[in-house]
Image 1 (cartoon, rainbow, N blue to C red):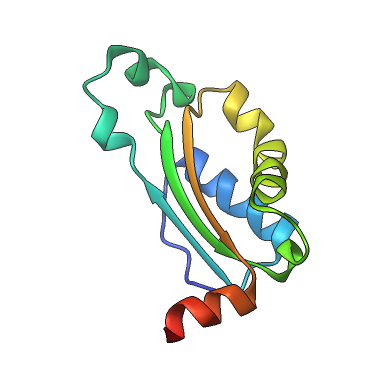
Image 2 (image 1 turned 30 degrees about the vertical axis):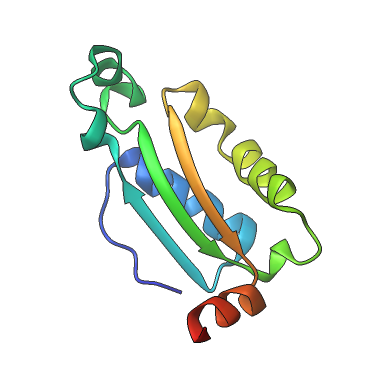
Length: 106
């Protein structure tokens, strides 16, 4: 799995929950909140941490046989608490190991 970069509390919670749920071979979480820092409502969200927008790329065989929407619903359900506490946007790229290998060898 990709090495975990130190992040804020929301990012760390996302990483922990997705690692537990998906046992990913690759997990990259990018905090995109800075792109939205000028939006007044965003400064107060994210539990005051300012962590409101993330991009997540995840590779897991847990996704085998699941549609993209099913994969995204799994992740959104796992992060329900984070959304309730101010996580505002999550951009997802979800692949199985086979899909990832095909994409990287093309």
